[in-house]
Length: 272
Image: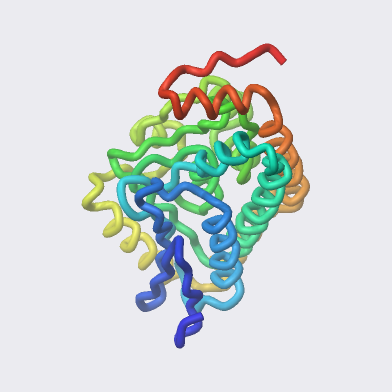
């Protein structure tokens, strides 16, 4: 913890300027992928931001070319190759921590804006969906990604996406698993604005500044009332995702998917 009370983290940074905070995922060489350390620090960050941060709006973004590429496939690969490791148990624990982070993110009483500066895949897409508002750079894209490695969705993906695009369209996107460009994401209602990458953070800050002008109680109640219809079952739903992704990583298709990814090949999944 710094002298100002802001958590000092290694895989992300929290910066506060006036009434606006910025959380920047900071593993650029790994495209801000979620390894156990980043997941743990994300939980620390959102708990602090929900309970103690002296701000009235938050921007979430990524450093380097990506917003967040999802779960770190090197973590999965090591777990699949090392027979002494129990990957499903490790992933179950990781999903539990990630899901607590998502719950704490949703507890934040002020607006949270995702400034999606590049690819948002897998749990990175889930993280963006969990934010209140989403803006995207023209170079950004969104990909469910889980089916490509034989994994079950997590991070709230199957909770938030149907509520944004509708259940039928969400199912279609998850099954077809496209790389959804920024313009298409706007057409789907996933993002509200698409701008050149150089203008993204300025737009995010302008929106944040506009939102800080609203009465705090109004903002808090609007978030509570609008989100109330979904929040009461979020925890149970995230438990289903936690067990789903953990169990999926113990299957042969997960091994096939991860192996094919690192070989640069299209996976040939088996019918079991």
